[in-house]
Image 1 (cartoon, one colour):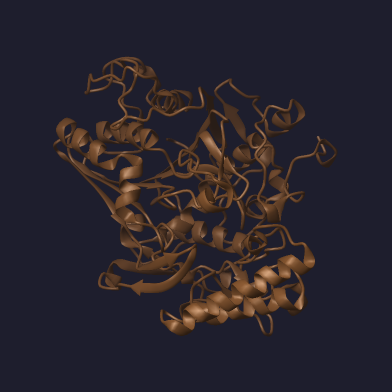
Image 2 (cartoon, rainbow, N blue to C red):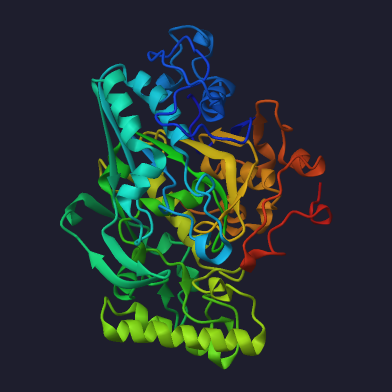
Length: 508
């Protein structure tokens, strides 16, 4: 790992069978000479094979490849280190269950078989002692124990303790806020700040990309949360994100996103996955309240009933619990049903709210802010620094064997793409991923804007400099588009027609 993440243009891509081994702890199905555990699965495990191949493609510890001494992650992980893994564990069930009859969870979260494969190679690099933390902040209504069962963590943990007794493995729910949810809506919020002192406020100040939006009358928001934390965190002079110390102080970050479309950001890959390192979601501007008619980007303009529905929801979000909260929810739903009946708005039209449409000019700024704050915050001096090189060791591995599209990230439909990607630079990875999803990276704001000049940049190269390694797809972004070497992911309702790749739109 001689190249700093900021300058690294390499993206490894592999394509395999788009299936997951379903039996935890997800042993490999081939015997590899470097593995300490000789237990094999009788059922094929493409995820394990793909992770291993990505390390080979990146050239990690190349001289010892396919020998008992091969230790690919030793290039970024030193013995005794603390390594944090950040999977996409957004929810414990597919929220498309009720509206679309979709039960599939392989397309919802980073699969347990991917996590298991990465754990093996991280543990080998730790050489018998060190610490691994798996952590995330799922949405507030998620049942954490059901989520652990979904990825097979209990079985993984037993295997891991037996195989790597000197390495401490833990999995942590970093949410400071949870909620009781009924029929998809929050009826009660539960805030627990007992460990609040373990969190750091990373302040981008006037360098935040949100500052240009702070015109007269603006108000940032996030669905189903009150405004008071948002108002305190984001002003023209302070722009704070609340992140647990583990994410900042760990020696190495391995980002494990899921390849999905996203109803509020177009796509969710490496960059968007960092939204989940924030302890309170109401530190995260997702939109500006209202429609364009009132200088907002929360939802498109609509009928009087449409606007009344959102006004009632806004009142509901300010309340923690109680009878009045429930009545506001019911009244908002009545307005929504009447609006749909009178205007012919399609079923699920409320998904356009909360910033769930292509007119959202806020969330992409938040996504880039979080990544900039993470990469440039130096915990040793307690501030953002201009040179990120000394302090950050980072690797992103994108799970796309089965991705998710349409009303993703909470109600995704499965897409059997077979792709997995790895890179040291999150923008490079997201650029290639968007192309492989049949989307135009130049029309996805957090990707296209990441290449613009700014303080605390995330790239030191241009999109055309990206080198795609592995041989399963062409070596350049332009060639992926020109040769149609992609698997079409369908955008969400609010992004249809706004981010898809069309041949006429490409200069090359």
